[in-house]
Image (cartoon, rainbow, N blue to C red; front, side):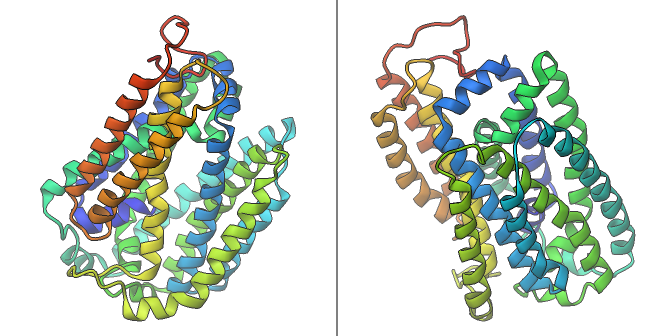
Length: 389
C-alpha cells in the first residue's frame, strides 16, 4: 500500500488507476481461474518451492519496510515493529484454530486501518503539507504510465498464484470462491487502496525530494496514525504467511528470519550513510538507499514471480509433477535479460525500457509453451487451475 504513493509522486494521480485496477481485478480473478479447491492444492504441491520463496520474500519485505520507516520517521513503535514481525513468524502455527483466529484478527486489522485512514485524512488536510507535495508530484511525463500499466498487469495478474494465503482462501471458500474473492478484493481490498490514495500526501512527504527528511515535519500524531494503520498489517501479513509455511520440513521460514534480520541490520548500519549521499543516477530527484532497496523488493513482484508463473507454471499444465529443467533455464534467461530492462526503467527512470522487459517475459512464456511436451487435456483447464497449452 506504499507503492501508490511512490507512483503518484513520479507519475501523477492517474498512476493510481494503473495500480489499482490490475491489482483488484487480478486478485479477484483467482477465485474464478482456480475452479476448485483441488486445483489450488495441486498447484501448491507442484510449485511448493516457488510458493515458499514468495512467502519468504514477502516476510522479508514487511520487516525491511518497518525498519526503513523507523529510520526515516522515528518513533519507538516503529523500531519495535520489525521485531514484532519476527516474533509473529516464530509464533505462527497452522491448523483449524488458525483459520478462525486469522478471520477475526484480519477483520480487526481492517477496521483499525479504515479508522486510522479516516482520521489521517482529516488531520492531513490541516497540516499544510498538500500544496508543497503537489509541487513535486507527477515529475515524469504522462505517457510513461503506459509501460507502468503493463508491469502492473503482469505482476498483479500472475503473482496471486504463488501466494499461499490466496490459495488458503480458495481452498476454504469451496463453491463460494467467486463471491468470496469478489467481495474480498472488489470491496474490502478496494476500500483499503482508496484510503491509501487519500493519504498519499503524507506518504509522499515521508519519501519526498529531501530523501525522507520530511518525516520530521509531519508531526507526532500523523506518524502515530500511520504506524497504527501500517504496523498491524505488516505483523498480520507475516503471521499468516508463517502459518502457511510452518508445515514444510525444510523450515525455510526460519531461514527467512535470518534473511530479514540481516537486512534490518544492514539497513540500520549503512542506511544513514547511503541516505546522506543518495544514489545519484543523474535524475532530478535522486533515489535514496531505502527506496532503492524497496524497489528491489518490488522487482520480485513485478518480474521474478510473475515470470515464474508465465514461463514455468503456465506451460507446465498437468504434464507432470516435476518442474522441467528446460523451463527453469528459460526462466533464468528471461530474468537475466528482462532484469536489465527493469533496472533501466525503474531505477534509472528510462520508463519505456520496462516495456521491453515485459515483452521478454511474454516471449519467454511463448517459447516455454512451444517446447513443452503435449499435456493431457482436462476440459479447458488443467488440474493446477491454469489454462492449458
